[in-house]
Image 1 (spheres, rainbow, N blue to C red):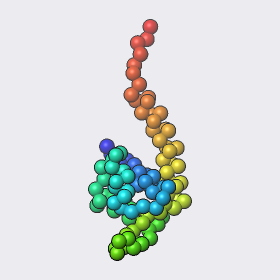
Image 2 (cartoon, one colour):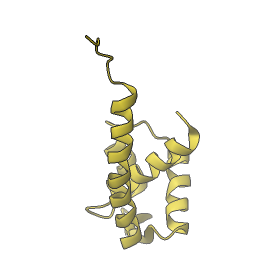
Image 3 (cartoon, one colour):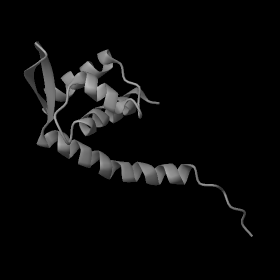
Image 4 (cartoon, helix red, strand yellow):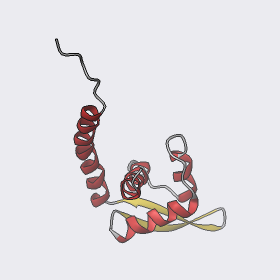
Length: 106
């Protein structure tokens, strides 16, 4: 898969993982695991990129005596998910065209 395409898909996956409630790194990895294998280093690179593009915000909170970073999706991040959904319909249409089975012409 093209690296830029994969990167964009992973960004949207991470945003989707936090769209309903704030979450932290380990939980995001657990939530994504049934769908995509994601290393901690890859996740934190994505989270930093999404924060720098203002698609999410970060807050620290104490949990069991340690600081934990929680990630919150912004409106810009929500908009990116919606943009992906819209774009995906076009991609799906192209996929169906490319993979269509040839029918014999009479």
